[in-house]
Image 1 (cartoon, rainbow, N blue to C red):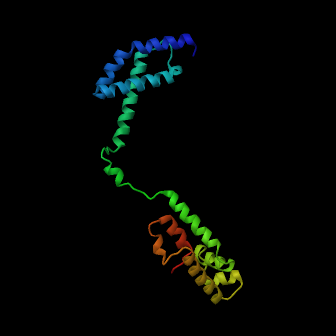
Image 2: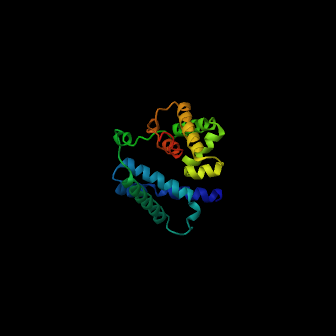
Image 3: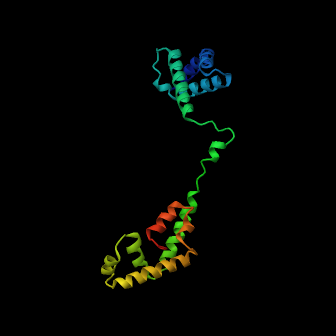
Length: 186
């Protein structure tokens, strides 16, 4: 848009301010709401000036923008919850995600500290869901050896994590699921 067209649009917008303000008051019901509605309308009109066809009714175009803006805000406000005192927000408390990631990273680091044969047995039985017989076949050892490795791995992992039972993870569902996946403490 060239400078002459911008000045022309600006003067046309300014000329419509009294009509826009009156219409906004009838929609919003308060002067503050009307002022906000007029401002939003002018901002949208200015941003979308290229969609205005010269020779058409500027007032009708602006009123349509205002009406659509008002009803969009109205529909949005119906979905919003008024929470002046913060009571509703206080009920929506969630544990911060970053702690779960740190706990999971700590768990993985401790899991890596297990001897390779114990870690392998624990992952096959706990995380992968193989039976003791299947795990023994995969590892090429006796079923009793797999059971022993899993038991030692579970005990060692609990010591490394300073846990007395899986219930120590109860406050953190993401980590509890990961730990439960290796089924230690059964």
